[in-house]
Length: 208
Image 1: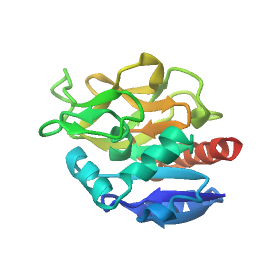
Image 2: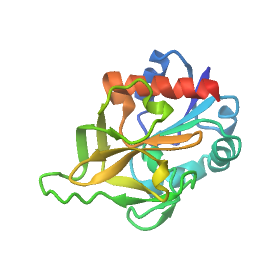
Image 3: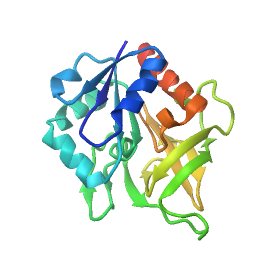
C-alpha cells in the first residue's frame, strides 16, 4: 500500500516517513498534485503557523486535490500537529484564516488555567480516548504521546472528538470524521504508542 505524505514545505517529513516505512507501507513525499492521485491514504504533517500553512498548500496547488480526494472521494487522511489544525474551518492564530474545512471547527490558542502549565505545551502527556476509533484500536488505556503546540482544534461537533488531553485545560487531542482524522501530538516521536497509531491508520486505510 502506498501512503502519500503531503509536502507543503512546513514539516519534518523524514521522521514521519521513517515511522510509516517501519510499519510496512510504501511512502511517497508528494509536493505536486499528481503525486497524490494513486496513494491509498494521505498524511498531512506540519509545524508552524496556520496562515502560512494554508498559503503554502494553495501555492503548491494542493488545496483542490486535498479537498477532492479526502472530502469528496473519501480517501483516508491523517493530519498531524499543524496538519490536524488545518483540517478545521479556520483559525484565530494571529488573525483570521480559512482552513480546509474537512472537519467543522476552529483553532484557538491554548489558555491553561494553571500558571504552571506553560505555552507552548511541550512534552509527553496522557490521552483520554473518549470513543472507539480505529486509530486507537488495541492501544492501552491512557496512551502517552509527545506534544509541541500553542493552539488547539475546537470541533463544532462533539462527536468528532476522539480523544482529549489536559494541560491546565482540557483540549481535543484527536479528531475523526469518517475517513478524515487528525492528532495534535506527534506519533512519529511517540515511540510504541505512536507506531501503534500509525499502524492502525494504515490498517484502516487498507479496509477503506
